[in-house]
Image 1 (cartoon, rainbow, N blue to C red):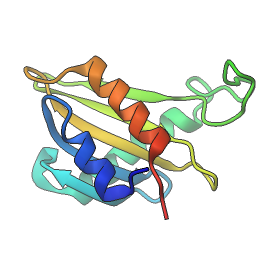
Image 2: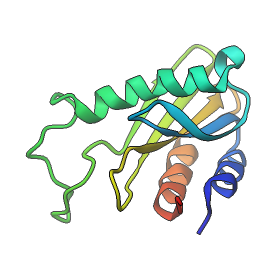
Image 3: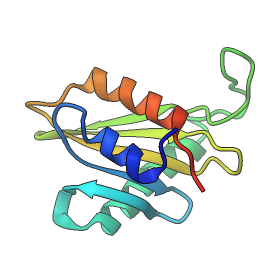
Length: 133
């Protein structure tokens, strides 16, 4: 089970990965980051990405309270977000935790060399195995 540093290293193995971070979406702080970031500032990118994650996780349009997982479990109703730009993809994967589930993985991919489907699968696996603490 990977910790933060190992998780980030494994995320960077995804084809086309330019940068990755683990972010607390409540505070907007990066718990760890690796590689490049748009604009060159990891903390600013973490804070801006946290705003997007917070909206998706808290707004009723995206996260209705009555929604439950197919297995009947309660938790975060949003699994991931994908933002497409002219030059890349930003994939945000929410991490279920035993405490407050306010953490997500953010992977920035090059649009020409990135594999979006593989990135989603890889982040889902990493989010499930990530050990925080």
